[in-house]
Image (cartoon, rainbow over all chains, first blue to last red; front, side):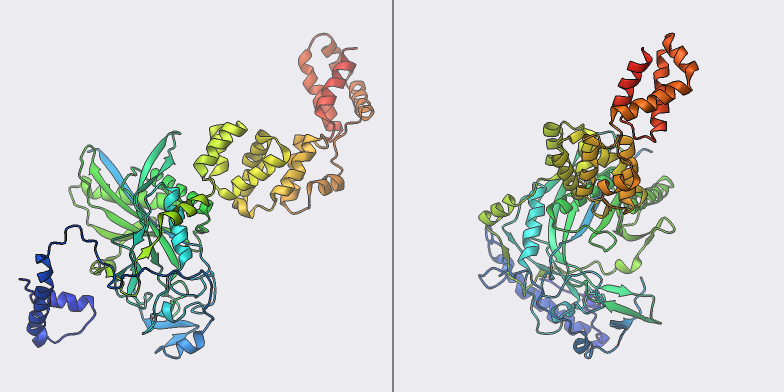
Length: 96
Length: 477
């Protein structure tokens, strides 16, 4: 039985940069805990010797030849950005 | 208290592919901002990554070169974090199943001995974009040209015990990737970057101390300095009874200090999971074997060959083989003049000295191998003396043309005509009757004086061997 508490929900929301209402937290906690419970059922299966699955398709990655196929499309792409200058995308100041 | 320093390095090597790891955008350095950032690099909705096979091949080459196990099946994971230079809000990397497993290299220590340093793993990942903080008021400019550039992150075991060892390790990895041609290793352009994990523990203690991670150190010199100031900082804390905090620190080369990057702390929960957009990367044992066949001779093997086949000293062989450009240059010269020792002396002497003086790498040396061959041949065939050759070399270095042209223009051709040398000798003898008398009364050492006078009178152009011989004949009369 997994039970997430308020601080778990707040942490998950912060990591995902989601703003959530205080009043909704108990409901999220319950729903997320239920999801974990469902997944936990897998623990009852004996997986000894089973190779971890990286992808549901039983296929392998195709390799691309190392060739430049993209042309400069900056003008078009930057039309979709809220703000640009001197060819750069502008975002609120990030201080390091 | 006696402290032991423990250092492990993470080196990010930019793989020298033409296109990015998951898109067909160019990786060329120095383009106008965002002109090489396509929809995949921008992380626009609906796009899918397609993996560049060349990045795999180059990663495998590195793994084979450090004697590592190559994982026939490796998997890309998403490393989740928010930062504006990573528009997808995750970096595609390999956490659980990296392409390269455990390997090792030998590093050279200052006392001439070797030490084995373990490589824990190496994995493929994409680089982030670049943030420019200074040009805009209250805003940061983002250039995504670098986003999606293929990287190989090489993680070492915590096997190094001093800043010097860390530098030796870094140099060796640099040498190997340059030999393999898997990276240009250009540190100014960020193709070869290093993070260092540094901790201290009481000597004799098994358990590691708390470490600090020094980020993004981009030169060999700074690695040594950054680690040393960090060791001092931690030692001060521990000596005064404090505890080191596990954190990420940035090295400031201007102030020569490290400082905490607090912003990185709370985000250290990356929630890795397999990237559903990418299938497992599979490479067969046969394909790995085929790549192994393409590996060039590596620095250690080359060094040994120079000692065995060419009879060079270990010191010379090592010095010539660290840099692949230098080794290639050397082999060309050595083969052309068929004199391993002479070629080595010139390369490690005059050529290296001039390069160091001008801050140039071998690949940028203004005198190319063919030009040096041209010069050394003129020493070999007695056209010029070794001393004059130095003068010609300097002229070549400053771009005055090939050896023959310079020798001609400056009239430096050695005088080998016996008659001409004899007449100079006669003059010297006539001008120095006192010394002649002394010499003939048994002061043999004066021969040096006469040789010097003759060489001076010939402006260094007389063949020294002939001068010696003829002088003896004339003086002994």
